[in-house]
Length: 180
Image (cartoon, rainbow, N blue to C red; front, side, top):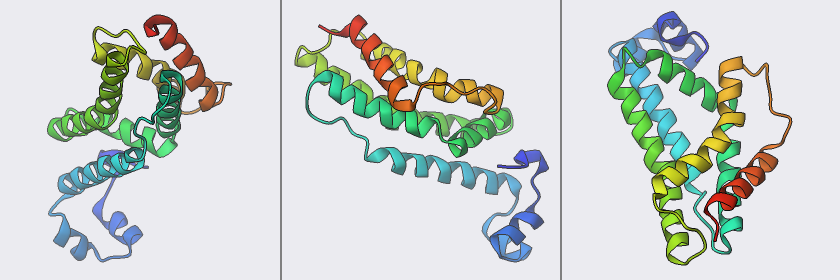
């Protein structure tokens, strides 16, 4: 994460891991295979982190607030941003890895929200013609302040609101548009 793909070297990585370079090469024939394993492992870890965040029962406002607050906490994590930076930077070299990473996130995060919005639509709590678009709107209101701004600025510019306030504002705006 620190040196990026180009700057990373197998010998220091082995040393940091407390294994010999030969042992590291025994697991990963080269840096490309190690990179792929690191990104796949990060995607799996991100899935585990968000797996407990399933939609709760209760009114739409409560369900959405719980989900997007957890999403905001996740997306504001500096390690999460570091992994995303690395995937974006190395996408031309590792298109398959990048697409697998993207698809995993889309199903693990967006898929959960889309399903919940369909359910909330079926119960009449929201009016959503296109759940995937509505999910994108809601997630975008979280991602912009807690993820993209610090991603671009290197954490030099931070939102003054807490993640909970960002989530509350996003849900309020979302329900103003999609609420019944």
